Amino acid sequence: MNKKAPPQPQLPAHGASVLPSVSVDSYNVEVEDDEGFVGDRASKGAFWELVDKWRKPLSEAGDDPLGDKASEDIGKKALVDMLSEGEPEAAALVLSSIEEFSQQLAYVIRRFMRLKEWRGTEAITVGGGFSGSRLGELAVARCGLILRAEGTDITLDVIRHDPDEAGLLGAAHLLPAWMLKGHDGILAVDVGGTNIRAGIVELNLGKSDDLAKARVVKSELWRHGDEDVGRDDAIDRLIEMLADLNSWAGKNKMDLAPVVGIGCPGIIHDDGSIARGGQNLPGNWESSRFNLPRAVVQGLPEITGQETMVVMHNDAVVQGLSQLPFMQKREHWAALTIGTGLGNVRFTNRDNKKPKKNGGN
Image (cartoon, rainbow, N blue to C red):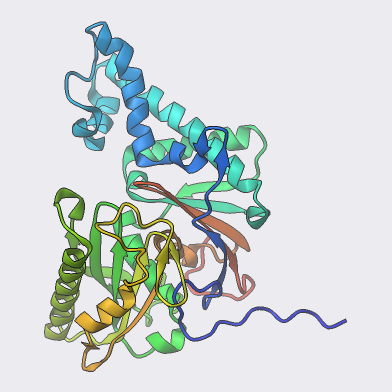
């Protein structure tokens, strides 16, 4: 009997299930239990709700060790400082919140591991803004201990790059090597529920052909969550950011491939439309009359004198792809992104036997 031929990648396509180095087994999966979507228990907002939960009885007794500020106004850095230098009660409250969040994250991972598409997952990398803080690192480490103690055979770690940069770096992995060869970098965009970030990813293919040495050399951030803006305003601002970066690259003699790689919340269809997941973005990004890749091409028709091409995928997929050079010894692995919501993606490496420069875990 003939063996089934492995899936073959096509030219870069929006939301593709087969990418140059991996197959995307699933992403943006919504798992439910009796209390609703389980991912809601492991979001950034869920952590702050736990801090509030532990503060409430103390506040009612007039003995809140964190004072009068709202939890989110205190911020992650202040909580980290309390862990190392604060009063014992304040540190204990922060530790209690981390512990409960870790338990919830472990529950979420257990539920994902029961999915058919997640069977055989060997490692999970955790990204998103929360993972970039010491609080996130401790929560992920504690979750890993919980899972190992109960016999769950899986490696759990935080994403290696700064989460803000990972959402840009992963965009280079959406493209086949031949499209990148001979170029210094690409433009990349990470669209989030609070921020839109655009940047230049320097490929450094001469140092590592698996993009392990890629880095963000220039980026711009716009916090649309702080402003009352609509979708058209957001697109105008994004185009302005990309034009500035393209100009900067020209002045600094960087030869950019004429491609913009975009990570965006939601289910990404092959025509560039967005479904289910864009509710936190400014305006209606799921409208049948709106197409983000087309809007970018219209606003930035050329890059370094060549016609612009855009390739877009889900933001958790793109952020997870930044970890690809360090997952070469795995066959099945996944990424979770802890942010406004909980992003998720499961990958299968298309050739985990092939030796790579700077290969990792």
